[in-house]
Image 1 (cartoon, rainbow over the protein chains, first blue to last red):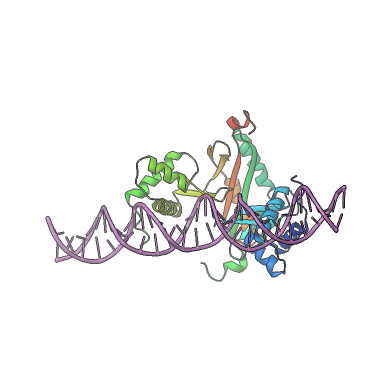
Image 2 (cartoon, each protein chain N blue to C red; image 1 turned 60 degrees about the vertical axis):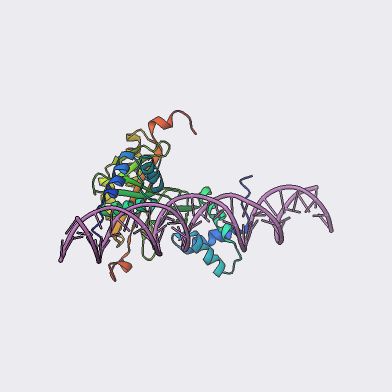
Length: 133
Length: 133
DNA sequence: GCCAAATTGATAACCGTTATCATTACGGGT
DNA sequence: ACCCGTAATGATAACGGTTATCAATTTGGC
């Protein structure tokens, strides 16, 4: 059965994910768990993460480097993120306008089942000032 | 030097990219070039692609699988895409509203050097009706 | 307490991308 | 026209991340 994935491990992952406060890579999460004393294996982290993503309790996106980043999602509600590419700070943003625009644009071209990817990467105020690059 | 990247190979890549008509993976592009008779190497394709992307003549995005997909970009202008996840049909879309929204949102939170990822994946009219899967 | 089923975790296989490095082609200078 | 230096090319190896494999452990039911 597919709905049997509830062992303490998954919750551990969810907690870690939740306390990370932002997007984090699967491996980073694994590190964190290990540091926290969990003897959890990397494979399990990936599995838990995949499950959480499927259920909708986690959000995943591809970093520009091709890594998969995950983040705890309070709801299965749709929202977007503003991510500092330097320090990782993540801000959830409302995108009502964009939602509408996306929906309109899609149906405008005869597209259905449209899901949009809308994320903004930048440098937060803190990271911007110091060194440009 | 960095501005010395102009040998026939890059143009070959650009042509291939251009005639692909949609997003294509670096490897797929390499295959295509090879099939077309070019003795081009995979490494060179990656290099050319990176260059084109840098100059702004190619657009790149990460597929959900983590692959990098490239597409010929008419201009270095910023625009987004509506992609059929079934047949690969790609439509360039104007996103003026979104541009503004993104810029506003970013600076609203003190972010600078904001680059946004805005793409819509869906099923085009042709692929939607027939067979669900 | 015993058995069956499922999860776990270490490791190996995979896949795409990037770096390495010898070879080759091109251009300039003489 | 020839020689030489510079840079691009391409085969292959190295890399990093993700997924699959599989034996061992744990869990729950009877």
